[in-house]
Length: 333
Image 1 (cartoon, rainbow, N blue to C red):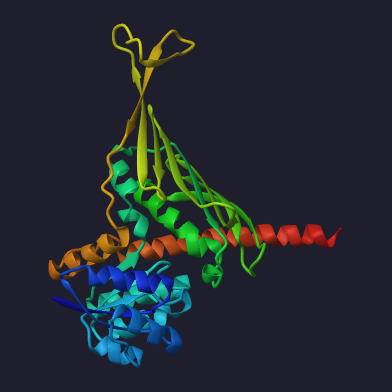
Image 2 (image 1 turned 90 degrees about the vertical axis):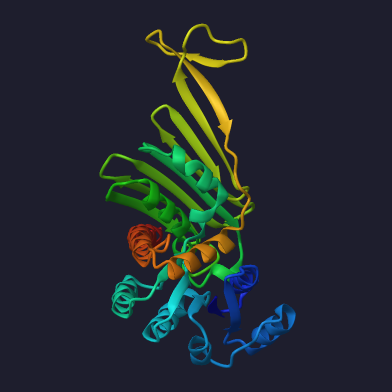
């Protein structure tokens, strides 16, 4: 049984603690949070030992689960890795690409396992739809959230868009050719709503809209490919596949068909995919345990996390250019 400790007991940290308590193969040793009031309440409410320092917690475990604010990820992860501990680290992996590259070096040198918490990989909707995804042509993504000041320590790209970047890089087997992006800051100092167009070298195009100032929550990922349309609802954990096939023989009375200009008829069928309503966070932590004990590659590697971060900063660079142009325009008025 692996001894595990959690760094950070905020909103997401408490969810991690609760999930770990349900995993038989982990021994939850305790947690650390720099906010004494928060830590005391979590210890009392959840019945988990509160450690007085990061070092004492790290020294007591085999695995460190980092759920701190992003700005603290590198310091916590590098300290744990230096002590030979396996590390699960929430997305985004760290605050900067430079820190990410340094973390790869540290992990390779220490020969420890590192998994990044890109949780949508374990969403039942993605798990159900992934076998049907083949050579996407066009992708449309909407990730909208109602305002919550908890995530405003980083731009919305690092807070929310990274989820969809990870899925994109998982399903599109091609390098990025170009990125065009724009975004605006509405209620926080960094962009709150962004739109991004990513073109890949193989011709795949993806449009991503992300907002943390919406009136409703939405997490929809739509994929168009040859003779099929796949939709994933990450919020409701549902997935559908719409297939477009040649009509063989005489269509049935209830078949949906379309007649194309060249005289060819196509049949449309809609399949609601069966999804296993599992807990995605619990599942990713279980998979990390398996990777450690079986000495296999974690399902979301440190390299995966770094690639996502690099793309996120490419988007932020493009947004910065857009904001500069917008500011020049406003200054002339």
